[in-house]
Image 1 (spheres, helix red, strand yellow):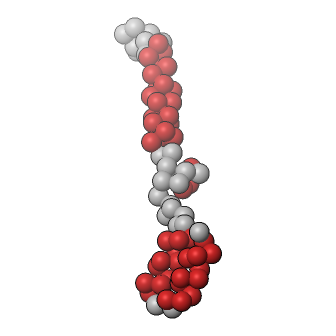
Image 2: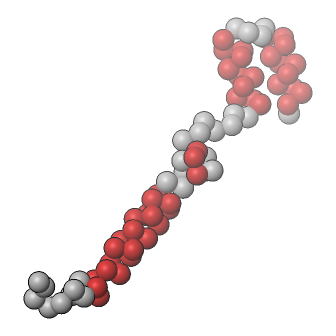
Length: 75
């Protein structure tokens, strides 16, 4: 049957769980920024109130007077 018996590869079997553990650790640490892992890496950053106000003014949603009043309120 086997040249060295059925247990010839047994000492090497610890390599497979070790490889699996290393792959899992690499996956967890490299994907730490993904939303599915609770990170904020790919999510859009939250804009400040000033940036939102500037964008609304640039799009014409609010007029200059309202923009100035809101800007002053933010400061």
